[in-house]
Length: 336
Figure 1 (tube, helix red, strand yellow):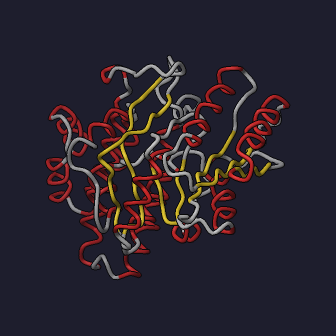
Figure 2 (cartoon, helix red, strand yellow):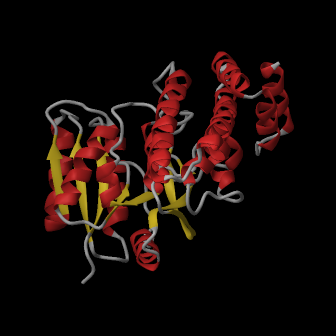
Figure 3 (tube, one colour):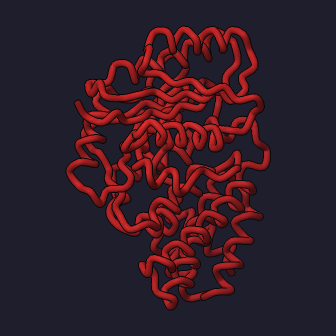
């Protein structure tokens, strides 16, 4: 029998029938894994609702020893809830973790192929895969109807895929965001060493930067896809109830980037003379994300930071972006 991997699921839902049904479907996708060697660690992030408590109790009764439930006495947010589950998974001896939010669907072969990837390469630290967007009824959302920021991630999985060593540099300077949380698996030792920050926006990207700064590889699975749930009429889950999403995202991403830079310095994977070139390209790439969200002042501020480091490198970094020329022209205009 193989070692039991841990699926990590924070739960913060309401008692309406739709959210309860989506929770059951998410758990069902884990129950249907072709690899049976898993445990599901759920953290009830103070849903504080009898119907939610009853649903979680039913899930635990159904799964038996393959389920662990931790009830929190206050709401701490998805990132910290994952940290609680990560620590428990480490206590259980899980060699690696697979994140799965409470409404997303894992492909039945996800654990099987993730385990194979980790066993095939001991230097692999993170294994991730792509996804299709579905609505609350399980219907696939047409590509043209997906918001630009999410569509960009999917398109990036068709080309310029982030893999290999120093993945944080690729994410920071080219992609901004590439591995959706519910499509990401990581070795447990690394997840314990680099927990999610206590943030409610872009806490996952902050974490991927730090994961990628360690010696070791990011591996992309091409054989399967997961399903990412965005309900009808919602741009994306993280942006739906946050009027300052892009401002907070910029601050958290910069914090995560600098933390990764410090780690890379310590591991000797980035030379001092390379740092400002990487930082300039990072500011430019983050400015593009701000423009995608129509956060023009945020983009301007980032471009000023880039220009202060190197006007020439800033212009070169804009030219190197993988985006339509109209977006590059907007960035050039703001940089002038």
